[in-house]
Image (cartoon, rainbow, N blue to C red; front, side, top):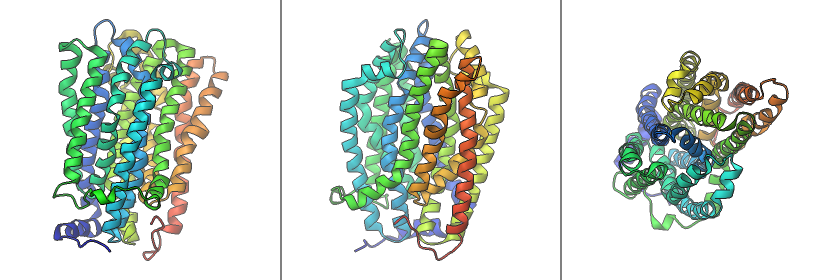
Length: 466
């Protein structure tokens, strides 16, 4: 039996179902974008400070860059649960099944806690061989282990803060979700120079500052979801695992999980190939470029997070006209942003590179590599917009196949193939990225438009995600 809804719950749902799409997307997306921009600082501020440590900055930055695949994989597991659970909870809310939405959220928290224990144990036991396999060298392994040994101890905080914050966003509490990230990011920015420079802890200090900041964010999330303001409340009776609830979550979440975990695999492939053809400087250049890519991708994710509750709720309510409007507006915003960023990268890459390093050799390599590696950035708007719209609509299979296409089917093979045909093999490695980006974006666009023509045209169509 569904729980009775309060006036505030009904009012919030009415806004998702009736408010003008443009104003609604703006009200949800601006806090989400702000949160993602601040989250970007959260993720890259360590690298900014580390890259400017006197004498050891370049080697330390490259060493921390070697840990990216592990950090990305930890975040990917939070997406497996959150990106599978939050849209389903929104769809359930749209269909007026609040009790089901709370069971979904409770099961997701239990899954995140269990995953945290396993990941912490695995990475503490095997971090050194993993880092060697991921492209560490004699010059960088020490810095990589210093950072990773501390960071993985905060895995539970990453899982809770990232994973459960999505359930705050999916209810329409965009400002609260934004505060989750801002609190952690501001604390991290303040603690980093204190631990790195004032306490003389270097790379270890950066990791400690990050873990403490994530812990505070996680506490904030849990206080909100167990408090009085939330529409969906965490209840102990909803946390017992029921596979009929969790399996559909995993089915939908596997797509964003693969998107992020293959980013981890991609980092390994790139790091080892770049180390082979260009040494530590080439690996350092990719560390800088990967940070720039976060500047590009995180605001795009903020836009899609703002659109997700609107799209999912109205799909659950079977209001296909509002679903189509929300997707069209999302695409307009993501394409405009990605095209503007592409123009900036092509014209002034040195400005972005200079944020992370002042080393002349690393700067020279990163500037020319950024123009090549990021040449297909303008297509990210379509790729991300349509990919995340599939997720918001609960279309797990299509989203999964498209997630596999760009990195597994296209990019990783091209990283190995292109150097065979380029005189400058390092150039061949970097050139694989834009080719894969353009092919994947074109395929995703065509696939979504064909599916939408058939599935989003009937206002009375029943949502298939439930």
